[in-house]
Length: 230
Image 1 (spheres, rainbow, N blue to C red):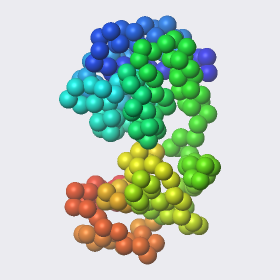
Image 2 (cartoon, rainbow, N blue to C red):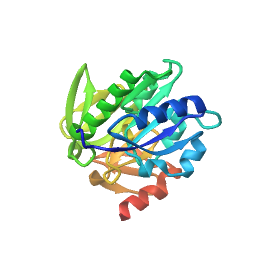
Image 3 (cartoon, rainbow, N blue to C red):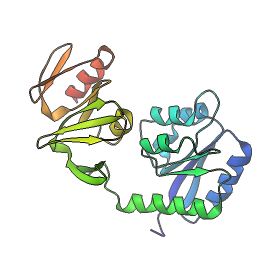
Image 4 (cartoon, rainbow, N blue to C red):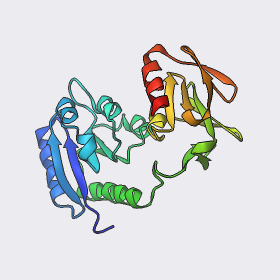
């Protein structure tokens, strides 16, 4: 773990906080500064999500906030979110961020967050594996990707429909979608994500998976057809 170097990108609208974070990065043996941006638009234009091993992202920024930028990323490197207030922490962890730090960021707390990133990088199950762990009824449950037939929105929860059972998970569709392999799962409607390998039939408006008919939204149709050709 000591030899692992993370290319790190900082995104924060405050010059004082950018300078503090740059100092923290420069002083950490496992971090290498790969970019520093003063707003989300500048960061997005740099395609930082494609080059970074770690992004340190401010929540409160003008025009485009940290959450909006996070949703726009095509790649999903580890994210440490930073903020002057604790109010956004719950939402941040719905996006599966590695940590949430309060400003001003103390060295010990920063180092703890980096250790967590390094540990996750080395040990956590990632999207190249054939399964995922979800928290349901206060337990972590292993679910094999091949067993997931579809996922549907259910208020503040999502419901995983698998070959063996249904599992209720407290998270948003958007956050959970980001944890799934893009070559195997696709969101076809605001309320449905399907396993592409489980499709039985479809037309212009409906997709059938394991006997369940689900609506195909007009704005997602092109992406659906493209996924089938891949």
